[in-house]
Length: 183
Image (tube, rainbow, N blue to C red; front, side, top):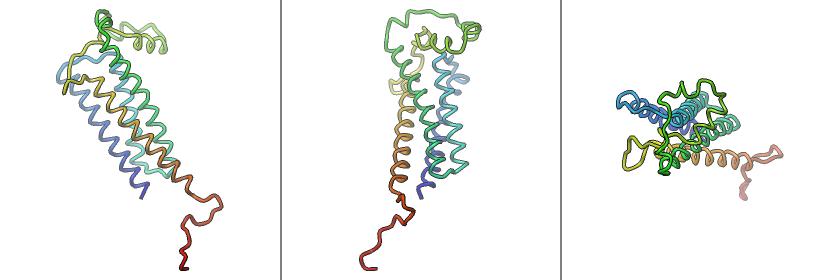
Protein backbone atom coordinates (compact mmCIF):
# COMPACT_ATOMS: atom_id res chain seq x y z
CA UNK A 1 0.00 0.00 0.00
CA UNK A 2 2.73 2.49 0.87
CA UNK A 3 4.57 1.88 -2.40
CA UNK A 4 1.40 2.52 -4.39
CA UNK A 5 0.90 5.70 -2.38
CA UNK A 6 4.47 6.80 -3.07
CA UNK A 7 4.10 6.02 -6.75
CA UNK A 8 0.89 8.02 -7.04
CA UNK A 9 2.46 10.95 -5.14
CA UNK A 10 5.36 10.94 -7.59
CA UNK A 11 2.85 10.99 -10.44
CA UNK A 12 0.97 13.92 -8.87
CA UNK A 13 4.29 15.76 -8.43
CA UNK A 14 4.99 15.08 -12.11
CA UNK A 15 1.58 16.48 -13.11
CA UNK A 16 2.09 19.61 -10.97
CA UNK A 17 5.56 20.16 -12.43
CA UNK A 18 4.38 19.58 -16.00
CA UNK A 19 1.51 22.06 -15.52
CA UNK A 20 3.86 24.68 -14.07
CA UNK A 21 6.31 24.17 -16.95
CA UNK A 22 3.44 24.45 -19.41
CA UNK A 23 2.33 27.72 -17.85
CA UNK A 24 5.87 29.10 -17.96
CA UNK A 25 6.24 28.23 -21.64
CA UNK A 26 2.80 29.68 -22.36
CA UNK A 27 3.75 32.94 -20.65
CA UNK A 28 6.99 33.07 -22.60
CA UNK A 29 5.83 32.13 -26.09
CA UNK A 30 2.11 33.06 -26.20
CA UNK A 31 2.01 36.10 -23.91
CA UNK A 32 5.51 37.29 -24.82
CA UNK A 33 7.14 37.58 -21.40
CA UNK A 34 10.92 37.28 -21.55
CA UNK A 35 12.41 35.15 -18.74
CA UNK A 36 15.42 36.46 -16.83
CA UNK A 37 18.37 34.39 -15.62
CA UNK A 38 16.77 33.49 -12.29
CA UNK A 39 13.56 32.50 -14.07
CA UNK A 40 15.54 30.15 -16.28
CA UNK A 41 17.26 28.64 -13.22
CA UNK A 42 13.88 28.06 -11.60
CA UNK A 43 12.59 26.50 -14.80
CA UNK A 44 15.57 24.13 -14.98
CA UNK A 45 15.07 23.09 -11.33
CA UNK A 46 11.40 22.48 -12.11
CA UNK A 47 12.27 20.47 -15.22
CA UNK A 48 14.67 18.29 -13.20
CA UNK A 49 12.01 17.80 -10.53
CA UNK A 50 9.44 16.86 -13.16
CA UNK A 51 11.83 14.38 -14.78
CA UNK A 52 12.71 12.78 -11.44
CA UNK A 53 9.03 12.50 -10.53
CA UNK A 54 8.14 10.92 -13.88
CA UNK A 55 11.02 8.46 -13.62
CA UNK A 56 10.02 7.50 -10.08
CA UNK A 57 6.36 7.06 -10.95
CA UNK A 58 7.19 4.84 -13.93
CA UNK A 59 9.90 2.92 -12.08
CA UNK A 60 7.86 2.21 -8.94
CA UNK A 61 10.85 1.65 -6.64
CA UNK A 62 10.91 -0.02 -3.23
CA UNK A 63 11.41 1.81 0.04
CA UNK A 64 15.08 2.58 -0.42
CA UNK A 65 14.58 3.65 -4.05
CA UNK A 66 11.66 5.86 -3.05
CA UNK A 67 13.83 7.45 -0.38
CA UNK A 68 16.53 8.19 -2.99
CA UNK A 69 14.01 9.63 -5.44
CA UNK A 70 12.54 11.83 -2.72
CA UNK A 71 16.05 12.93 -1.76
CA UNK A 72 16.84 13.89 -5.38
CA UNK A 73 13.56 15.77 -5.69
CA UNK A 74 14.31 17.53 -2.40
CA UNK A 75 17.64 18.77 -3.78
CA UNK A 76 15.86 20.17 -6.86
CA UNK A 77 13.16 21.69 -4.66
CA UNK A 78 15.65 23.38 -2.37
CA UNK A 79 17.60 24.80 -5.32
CA UNK A 80 14.38 26.11 -6.84
CA UNK A 81 13.23 27.52 -3.51
CA UNK A 82 16.49 29.42 -2.99
CA UNK A 83 16.38 30.79 -6.53
CA UNK A 84 12.73 31.85 -6.29
CA UNK A 85 13.28 33.35 -2.85
CA UNK A 86 16.19 35.42 -4.13
CA UNK A 87 14.10 36.73 -7.00
CA UNK A 88 11.23 37.61 -4.65
CA UNK A 89 13.72 39.53 -2.50
CA UNK A 90 15.04 41.35 -5.57
CA UNK A 91 11.51 42.28 -6.58
CA UNK A 92 10.71 43.64 -3.14
CA UNK A 93 13.85 45.83 -3.06
CA UNK A 94 13.25 49.06 -5.01
CA UNK A 95 16.97 49.84 -5.42
CA UNK A 96 17.50 46.85 -7.73
CA UNK A 97 14.83 48.11 -10.10
CA UNK A 98 17.09 50.98 -11.07
CA UNK A 99 19.86 48.72 -12.38
CA UNK A 100 20.16 48.23 -16.11
CA UNK A 101 21.63 45.22 -17.81
CA UNK A 102 22.43 44.20 -21.36
CA UNK A 103 19.35 42.75 -23.03
CA UNK A 104 20.71 39.34 -24.00
CA UNK A 105 21.76 36.66 -21.52
CA UNK A 106 24.02 34.94 -24.02
CA UNK A 107 26.00 38.12 -24.72
CA UNK A 108 26.25 38.94 -21.04
CA UNK A 109 27.59 35.58 -19.89
CA UNK A 110 29.38 34.08 -22.88
CA UNK A 111 32.91 34.52 -21.50
CA UNK A 112 32.23 33.87 -17.80
CA UNK A 113 32.68 30.48 -16.11
CA UNK A 114 29.59 28.71 -14.78
CA UNK A 115 30.11 29.65 -11.12
CA UNK A 116 30.65 33.32 -11.98
CA UNK A 117 27.45 33.30 -14.02
CA UNK A 118 25.51 32.00 -11.02
CA UNK A 119 26.96 34.56 -8.64
CA UNK A 120 26.22 37.38 -11.10
CA UNK A 121 22.60 36.24 -11.38
CA UNK A 122 22.17 36.03 -7.61
CA UNK A 123 23.69 39.48 -7.05
CA UNK A 124 20.75 40.97 -8.81
CA UNK A 125 19.82 42.24 -12.22
CA UNK A 126 17.40 44.86 -13.38
CA UNK A 127 15.29 42.46 -15.38
CA UNK A 128 15.05 40.01 -12.48
CA UNK A 129 13.60 42.75 -10.27
CA UNK A 130 10.82 43.64 -12.71
CA UNK A 131 7.31 42.41 -12.00
CA UNK A 132 5.82 41.90 -15.45
CA UNK A 133 2.84 39.65 -14.66
CA UNK A 134 0.72 38.89 -11.60
CA UNK A 135 -2.12 36.56 -10.72
CA UNK A 136 -4.08 37.26 -7.51
CA UNK A 137 -1.46 39.93 -6.74
CA UNK A 138 1.38 37.36 -6.70
CA UNK A 139 4.22 37.57 -9.21
CA UNK A 140 5.63 34.61 -11.12
CA UNK A 141 8.55 34.07 -8.69
CA UNK A 142 6.12 34.12 -5.76
CA UNK A 143 4.01 31.43 -7.41
CA UNK A 144 7.18 29.49 -8.13
CA UNK A 145 8.25 29.83 -4.49
CA UNK A 146 4.88 28.50 -3.32
CA UNK A 147 5.16 25.50 -5.64
CA UNK A 148 8.72 24.67 -4.60
CA UNK A 149 7.90 25.04 -0.91
CA UNK A 150 4.85 22.77 -1.22
CA UNK A 151 6.92 20.15 -3.04
CA UNK A 152 9.67 20.49 -0.41
CA UNK A 153 7.17 19.88 2.39
CA UNK A 154 5.80 16.85 0.53
CA UNK A 155 9.31 15.45 -0.02
CA UNK A 156 10.36 15.93 3.62
CA UNK A 157 7.13 14.34 4.84
CA UNK A 158 7.56 11.34 2.56
CA UNK A 159 11.20 10.85 3.55
CA UNK A 160 10.30 11.01 7.25
CA UNK A 161 7.43 8.57 6.68
CA UNK A 162 9.72 6.12 4.89
CA UNK A 163 12.35 6.44 7.63
CA UNK A 164 9.71 5.88 10.32
CA UNK A 165 8.43 2.73 8.60
CA UNK A 166 11.99 1.45 8.26
CA UNK A 167 12.61 2.02 11.98
CA UNK A 168 9.50 0.09 12.95
CA UNK A 169 10.78 -3.11 11.35
CA UNK A 170 12.27 -5.53 13.85
CA UNK A 171 16.04 -6.00 13.64
CA UNK A 172 15.95 -9.69 14.62
CA UNK A 173 14.17 -10.78 11.48
CA UNK A 174 11.06 -11.80 13.39
CA UNK A 175 7.56 -10.78 12.55
CA UNK A 176 6.56 -7.21 13.17
CA UNK A 177 3.02 -8.33 14.09
CA UNK A 178 2.39 -8.85 17.77
CA UNK A 179 1.01 -12.16 18.88
CA UNK A 180 -2.56 -12.00 20.08
CA UNK A 181 -3.17 -12.87 23.71
CA UNK A 182 -5.77 -15.45 22.71
CA UNK A 183 -3.39 -17.53 20.56
